[in-house]
Image 1 (cartoon, rainbow, N blue to C red):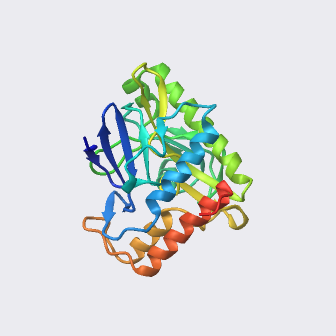
Image 2 (image 1 turned 135 degrees about the vertical axis):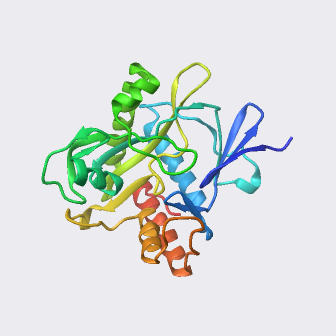
Length: 277
């Protein structure tokens, strides 16, 4: 029996295959919660292979959902993984080590992110005194919204919430340390967790990829403005410069932007893993 499509997300398609899930990373590009009409070749495979590399680096910190990276239908080889079914926790777990994106917007307004107070005087791109856990909602439609840790506790309970915070910061810390050896700053990252059949907390989805993280070159990092990046921010910046208003439908991506995006994703994959694409 062929795998049955359960859900088609912004980038990933989820299939049921017996007791397992097959997670397929497509070449779709989503910015500001809108899928753009132009794919980026190899993007899904890069996200999958980089996630697999990171799962291996993190396996002593947290179990993950991977069953096999090879036992998948041949048409999805390289960009799909066979996974355990999880009951996904409806919180986006975000760790931030630097000030950027929506976190910068809230800091400028309130001197906080997700209710976490930060010192005066930070600039765009500044390194935070210590990494912070800044969760958001996990909206099925529309935009995710910042929530406080207390709101996570009210929703998920104190023990699970504290475990989510500790694991998110531990994974970010490990990832940032490893990436720094290759001259890559991980400014922030978004993680997703679920509970398996036994109630164990498991890392799922993707991890520390250019779609879920901000990657900056350490040798050009200068607080006080936007940073060079090896991630989806490149496409976000182009989309805004095109005059698009962030509503559906999104604009077609020009060929040169598609190719540059592909090059950035390949470059950061090679830098971090040491493997040739």
